[in-house]
Image 1: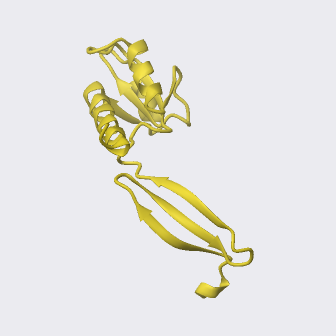
Image 2 (image 1 turned 60 degrees about the horizontal axis):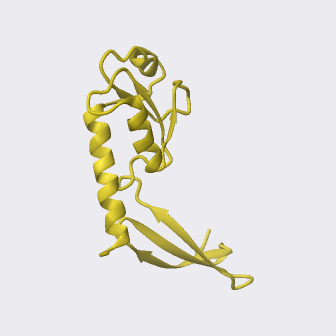
Length: 129
């Protein structure tokens, strides 16, 4: 396959701090599209499905759920194949279920490190106020 066989060609990649804008052009019609692509490492909670298991030390599960939702995660009470990770609090009774389904388990401290990282990156995208 050669370059000329593609109908759509990326004409520009515009880098931003934590994501990039890709401009593509349709060879047949000349139409141009912009596509936003974000760096998943910079936004570790965006689009993730999270379950909180056990008692959290710093905040209640309800508060942690609210924080996660504000940052683009969905929070459920049941572990399923769609769960991206489980945040383990004290006496988290469902951790074995997560392990049985090969679902990543993170500590409360790891969760708040992700929150801190994502908030920092969101502020960086907004620029100086």
